[in-house]
Amino acid sequence: MTRLAAVAGLLLALASAPALAALDASEMLADPALEARARALAKGLRCVVCQNQSIDDSAADLARDLRQSLRERLLAGDSDEEALAYLTHRYGDYVLLEPPLKPATWILWFAPAGFAAVALLLAVRYFRRRE
Amino acid sequence: MRRLLFLLPLAIFAALAVWLYAGLGGDPARIPSPLVGRPAPAFAVNGLATGDLEGPALVNIFASWCVPCRAEHPLLAHLAEEEGVVIYGIAYKDKPGNTNAFLAELGNPFRKVGYDEDGRAGVEWGVTGVPETFVLDAEGVVVLKHTGPLTPDAVRRDLLPALGR
Image (cartoon, rainbow over all chains, first blue to last red; front, side, top):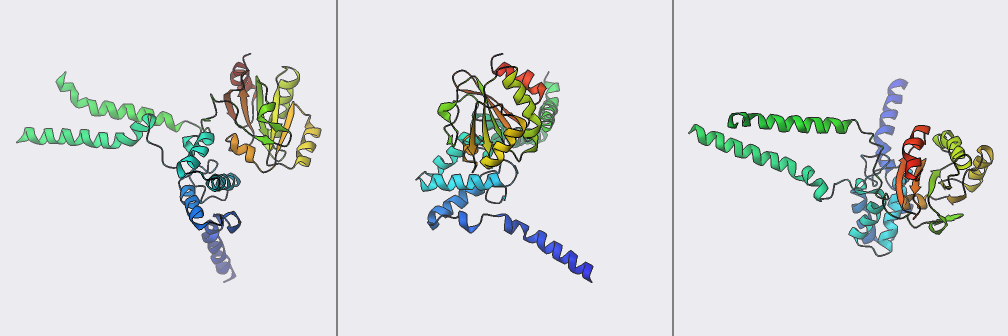
């Protein structure tokens, strides 16, 4: 029985861990509109040390620093684009969870559609010939 | 020729597979720094600011709490003393007292040390963890970033050539 309670307690602790990980109230901006923008931007920024978490989700020290930098930029009057540029200028496009569309990433963005188009073309030709 | 065309999708698949497989071998911690090719970033902390940096030089981000920093320290000492390399240190998220104790214990290879207690200079340098080492050329432009502890191999192969030696 005590073992069952211990397991249940452990599961509960594990399940609540992600909730603890997010930002704490002391980091939040007083202006709710600005804070909402900061939260939205943070969800799209990679925590470069944990790599596949956003800085909004991550409890890592560096994620906290980046959240803080981001909020400072917004407080200083940066637009969303300027605030993101501030971070990509320092951490590279890697800090963005969604890769930007530019010549170096064309293959990434367009290859799937390209393959589908080629497949469609081949399929159309194949069925036409059979008729 | 036309009859061989049916092999084309297979060839494309093979090329893609080889390319993607090669990508699996990379170290995910190795993130290319956007700083390379640009002047040293603007920062100012207690003890060190951008204007203090005179290239060619190394900028070493370290901390007393960082174990790999301890491991690479003799190499920095060797570079400073035997090779005459100018090295600037930035103590990342470290209490000045602890930084000074670290340097008193292991020796101070740095021309100047900046105390970046809250890690804000670290953000300017795009630091993801310590240790990290940047190479500045004579114009103060970042020419190389080394992530992780320095090794004799990395120094010989990457750092010294980047310093122009």
